[in-house]
Amino acid sequence: LAKTTQPISMDSYEGQEVNITCSHNNIATNDYITWYQQFPSQGPRFIIQGYKTKVTNEVASLFIPADRKSSTLSLPRVSLSDTAVYYCLVGPRGDDKIIFGKGTRLHILP
Amino acid sequence: SQTIHQWPATLVQPVGSPLSLECTVEGTSNPNLYWYRQAAGRGLQLLFYSVGIGQISSEVPQNLSASRPQDRQFILSSKKLLLSDSGFYLCAWTTGTGFYEQYFGPGTRLTVT
Image 1 (cartoon, each protein chain N blue to C red):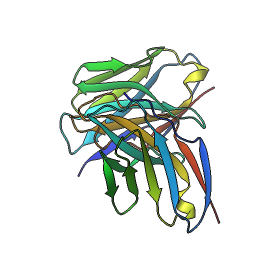
Image 2 (cartoon, rainbow over the protein chains, first blue to last red; image 1 turned 90 degrees about the horizontal axis):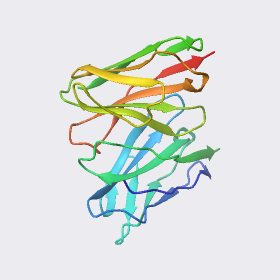
Image 3 (cartoon, chains in turn yellow, green; image 1 turned 135 degrees about the vertical axis):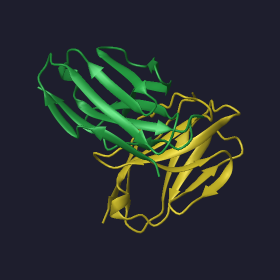
């Protein structure tokens, strides 16, 4: 499994766009990039997954440069309810072992 | 639709007592099943995962064990709890091919006193 590095914490304000970057220098050819969100006392919730370029859904966008050594989760116009821990995971489809890192603690201020 | 259940929701147990946490999944067959533990303010630690009945892979053996007696049932056990076993225990499942979207249960908050 590719090692990932994310900021430990970030602060932002309501209404701002938040970008969280994940570094994964040793990503393999068949690895996908997946992001989860976790609120206190709940299990993580899948946000988005991508392989290259850009993926967008109703919650977020995922930007992946051509070399795939990093990825950026973009949350448009955040609100207080986006305060959570965000995890970046990298691994191949078909890999049974799924390991979470420490994640990024995002704190949205009013 | 698929549903994942965990019980109990909260548990307070003395040191040295046994533990049994149960997780069941509805609405899918042959899922991959996972047990994670999260200590207060920490990330998720993968404890066990299972790709089928009776198949258990252990990441953190210590004093915990897991069993999968049925396709959609996953049990986490301990014969003697330690203070360090306190935490938030989460069960999760994915489709059998792995690393797709993982679905988590509501969790069990365990306090060992």
